[in-house]
Length: 485
Image (tube, rainbow, N blue to C red; front, side, top):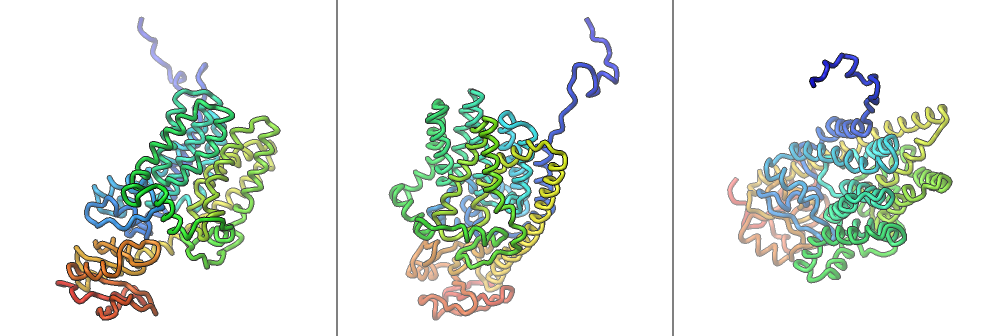
């Protein structure tokens, strides 16, 4: 029996028996997030990588010697960027790829929460998180913290779906998200797992094997590397602690506050807070979190609110209580998780006037974040371009691969110059003075110094060349190089 031809009215959303098509708010948020990155972040950062970025990207760049990979780092971001940097040695291509991936990850991570907290809360939480300047600048950057945030949001959401909704597939997705988080930052995954495991012991013990299995799978590479490079997990943790400045009890709230609007890394943290009026949202976070928790208790829906709060608190511990320096990106996982209960609180406001007032406050917050984003992006681009200019000056002096660069800022400059890098002091010690002198007999070698700084003892008789495009920096070239021009 053939179907009767459909009339135009039968295809509209107002047809009987058919629901109006819902607005894809979360997808629109992800699209806006990508647009902000493409307009405000990618253009100024399109031609050079930052310091830490060069470390991660160089690990699997087939054209550049891998930079020293210190004990606290994990290789997830290196794995993520490897296919793009191998296919096209272009910073712009890498930025575009990461922008698209981070926008898709924002959608996917918060989409997990839709059956738990609803469509409006999910979209608003993604909007609040993606509206932060540090979230926006981190999207196109080859850095792990944003991906830990996405993994933490998704893992916590899948845990709740496994416990509350008893979805069978949720356990497997939970394991996968915990494993992915561990690949990007092994210690952060352990902190994330603590409140999830504690909750599972009282409610949802069936999730425990998946939590343990996901964590073990994600940590496997980090543990194997610990034995190969450091002799044991304990040794790697010891070296990591030393690299981080002897982790212990350090009340780090002041440094986190001082660096809230930049710089991207505050170590040692001598910065003063820039534009304090633009940081009121940070002070409001604990108040909003407490209000959300109180409301959840009254509604008897405690777990969907308390668990992301507990996970956010756990992920903040190492960065607020155990180190003595700071970077705004460190707290990205906490911000992402806190956005969910805060959004849930806002969507429960019943007063029309109150909603208008909150909407105006959120709009003002986005404007303030855009102001900070513009300033920090410009500053970051200037710093990255100085690295690239210094590398060009080294090329002009005849330093060509294979070559070696040492001294302050050697890692990013060496990457741009196509050279290996090595340090004899500081957090990235990878060789000795004798090792550099020995290498200098075989390849062109330079030691960099900044204004007023003397070269190390082994390079005192090397030839100094001021780097004209980076005033105040000097390259001390070993007698055996440069070769050619």
